[in-house]
Length: 205
Image 1 (cartoon, helix red, strand yellow):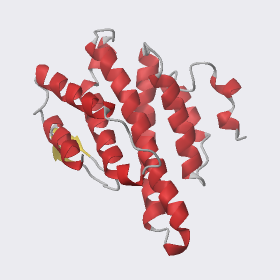
Image 2: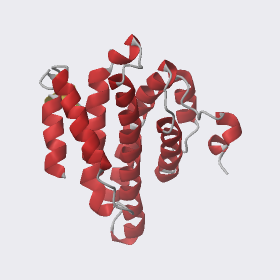
Image 3: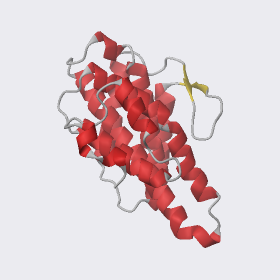
Image 4: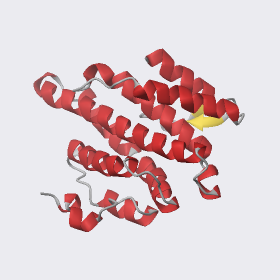
């Protein structure tokens, strides 16, 4: 078993207790095996999403890991696109792994958003509210895009979560604020809004 999967090293709350711990966790992931790395990340995110109340440190760790894992998502899709006919089974596994990664992040960001909506978060959370909404929409977009290749079909709960997230963005007047959105394999971002990202997800569905 790889060392970073050892629960003794992570503790009961998982590795996502602070930005420093998230970075340490990331450094221990196997660079030569993106699928194994995805499974470890998804396991950590699952443990985080299962908690009723996230600390500010865990919230910041989620944001940090999301930034770090952009390259992992790109690597999983590159593996598929360059796999060739002889590696078709590995290619399918890469798509399934990319789907699972986005689903895990989507669940974790929904957890964070619920805590913000319930008023249980500190000011440090609310300063990142637009980022939470944007990344929630983008991870759900990727999940929907890769759904045909997923090992198991997702339930419809994430669609209800998308609708709730957009209604919340509307309630605080943030749905049309300009922002920069960077998608998979893009070097630079493009101008967008939360409303546009929400509609993009609906079109994919």
